[in-house]
Image (tube, rainbow, N blue to C red; front, side):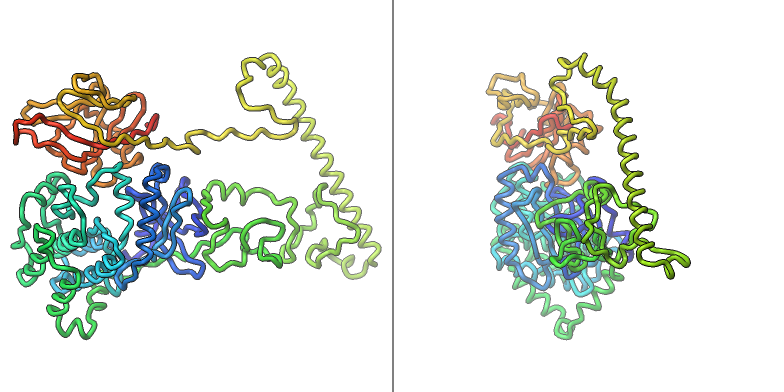
Amino acid sequence: MNSATEAFQPLRADDPQTVGGYRLAARLGSGGMGRVYLSHTRGGRPVALKVVHPELAEDPTFRRRFRREVEAARRVRGAYTAELIDADAEATPPWLATVYVPGPSLSEAVARRGPLPDAAVVWLMAGVAEALVAVHGAGVVHRDLKPSNVLLAADGPRVIDFGISQASGLTATATGNTIGTPQYMAPEQGLAGETTPATDVFALGQTAAFAALGKPLYGDGPSMTVLFRIVHSKPDLTQLPEPLRPLFALCMATAPEERATPAEILAWCRDYLGEDAIAGGGPAVWREVAGLEEEIPGPVARPGAARTPSGDGTPEGGKGPATALPEGAAAPEPGQVTSAASGAAVAAKPATSQPRAASEPQAASQPRAASEPRAASEPRAASDAQPETGAHAATDPPAAVHRRRRAARVAGVVAMTGALTLAGLGWKLMDGPDRAAGRGSAAATSSGPAATPAGIAPTPTPTPSASQPPKPVPYPGLELNEKNSISFKEPVQHEDGDRTGDIRMKCGLASGCVMESDASVFSTPRKAGTGSLETCREELEFSKRNELTFHVLAAGSEVCVRHPSGDIALFVIGIKSAPGLSKDPSWLRADMTIWRAAS
């Protein structure tokens, strides 16, 4: 990743321009929790700023978890973590900022150069283990450690998203109990069991195995199939370099209590590296692995930076922050999110009532507007005078110059008055037929927008869908079996014997049990743990599946469902029976979130 264009994307039309006092410089990506942008502190330090998806921000439960996890993450201080430096859980939408780490993720580095050498794998495990010591010491369990959450800087790895995965994961899966990415989960996560620091240790082993092999240790395939292997089989360590197998065995024991602690892993790595660890040979390894450093875009220039600020630090004649703030400081008040479109509109608005700064001379041919007469006693700035040319500027007496200036101002006033009169006459001519038509259809338009005074352009009515996105409606603890059904309309839970709902379970087929519907369509997110309205919209856009086989679903699996009415639901499996393994009826329990009229 040697060029800024590879890592940094330009802002899009729907991206904000500033967030919480940070002016955005580029777009870094997006995920199940929200979008990530590049910004800078007031001192010019680059940060990764994450803005939560609007549908998550509407959930009070999410905000409570987000607030708790942000406070926990603030306590994490470690050499191999990306420090959380700012956040606002009360903003709309909530956001957080972490130190930006220049360098590729582990997944990107392996895709570009292949598996890492044995020594680099050990250095990786040592750095991540040290990060986990800091994270766990702050009372935080990561729960989603994976190659894309490990960044490779020139001086070592950095673990990102610590403490945030718990808040975002729980909400993004609509209160589901399984958090994480299946390929890097621990067995207890696949069984919806308790997550502890040992869960992160298992994920560390999985992540390091990916670095050594260039692929996941448990193989590829559907996420739920891989998770089944993790839960029901031991890792095949024979694929890994032989000298490192004892270390991987310590990390990936099936029972959490049998796994090594991060401190023990760190000690093992130091013993293995020997003199290299003492001499500090890590940076040379990481420079080779990470490649050339990225070219990070600088802070975004502030609009109107050429103006001279007034004595109180605000732009001349304006309201808002001072233009004299350090580079990268944002224009709006902290917590305010300003879109690129609205920012452009404000910048384009002519400031007719704003006095002209001394460094901005007025053109000689530009008359002063009629609404801006200069008081007789008002002093004129040196650069505000009309520039004179030729001999008149040097030889004319002050009285003659004053007469010419006064004549120019009078001419300007007359011209402006005439222009306004013609504009008003044109408006009256165009408005006449409209008024006549309006009187004839007053009853039909009584529910429309209120009339505006003559001579004032009507204000466009905002689109409700743009300002009011669909709100998530949670329905936790639903049960689906062979005798009942679930509906999009309330009551969503149909009792046994009622099969009239939109979603039903059907068993006895060669493939086992299926989730079926007569009219709704199903899809599963390609990446586990990313279920959200935005994800489901994308996944369901071309889906025509009216049934879904249950054997590919496990605890924590997400299913997107679209109803013909336009409602979209996210169905999160909490627990299910094992069809074919017992004589008990098949069933499952799940949480469902519905966004009404969202497609």
